[in-house]
Amino acid sequence: MFKKLTLPNGLRILTAPMQGTNTVTVFVMCGTGSDNEPAPIGGISHFLEHMFFKGTHKRPNHLAISQELDAMGSLSNAFTTHETTGYFVKAGAPYLDRCLDLLADIYKHSLLPEAEIEKEKQVVIEEMHMRRDEPTSYIWQLWESLLWGDQPAGREVIGTEGVIRGLGRKDFLEYFIHQYVAENTAVVIAGNFDERKGVGRVGELFGDVRTGKPRQKPSVAEMQTEPQFRGEKRAIDQTHLLVGFRGYDAFHPKRYAADILGTILGGGWSSRMFVRIREELGLAYTVFTTSENYSNRGYFLSYAGVTHDRIPATVQAILGEYRRIREKPVSTEELGRTKDYIKGRMLMELETSNAVASHVGGEEMLTAKPLTTDEVFARIDQVTAADCTAVAEELFRPERLNAAILGPEPEAGDPHAVLEGFS
Image (cartoon, rainbow, N blue to C red; front, side, top):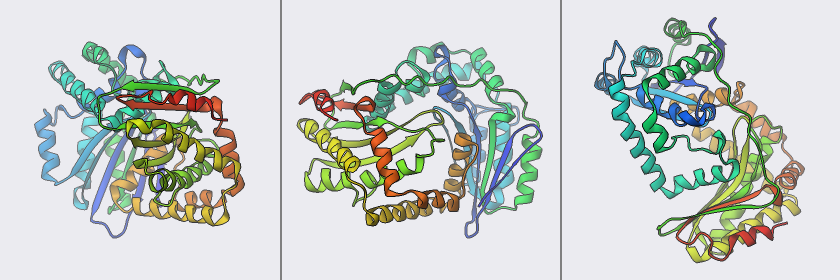
């Protein structure tokens, strides 16, 4: 369970007290990310996240911040996505006040020194290189670029080297002033803490966050009339492929039916994709299916890592499972087993304070209406086999079909022709 309240300045506070833990986690989340960036400053959300750890008047440099975090034995980090930037600290329960004070300080008072910006540019670029050198990471960017092209939804969150090198302190200040406002901010506390004191302390520390209307992200243009394919050559030992469809956004009424359908197809060891592609055909070690939702778009896909000469067979097998579940209703037994799997995994995933804070905060930033586990389970229980079939019939269509392949021979066996044969 969690509670939500809003301060007079519009900043949201979400609290999730937990029994049986000795830790507390604080997330400070801002509803801004690469989706909110015009192309000339693409990547600034992520870069600014880095700069929040470079010093304030109270904590004048990175070392002062990191030593304080280490002195608590804390786990801390930050992240940037298309739609959200977040900062968190997890520590022993007695350190709640210090966690809040530090996060409030860097969130409101980061100095953003020009010298540190110039130095950090190379750090961000090296992170960019690292991500692009990791095929299991880069394949997702290849996929989103295929779906949404040259609009914020299709660009890399981290930006491009040319844009990063050209950013100046003025760019950061303007972006910070526009986006880091109270209405766009949520503070989440989860774990072992006194709820009344925690809320009061958040009010003291964050009640003066400036007000204002943040820049809104542009709508997403969905432009597709036939199967699309994008292959990129990479000298690696394994070919990585994503095959799937444009899907639902986070507000779509069929979101949970799509989640269940994805789990039936590729959510566990007994899932259809795993059994067919790994156990029966021996094509891949890793294979899974997922339904992913943003606030204004989504996708439904399957991943597999395969030997280069097995690309056509793997794509055919994936498409075959999509077709089979579209044409033959899911059994009552399989549906029930899948629902229990989803519930069990969710309960296990939410056993720690940082997981709870991340989940509650993430849903708050995505939909502004996070659900309790009981509410999520109720939505899952309402899904019928007919609902799953309806999702498959709506999504698994040629005009929504896409495939991204990364490897030394991404077009081996003409996977585009395999896609065009899907009906």
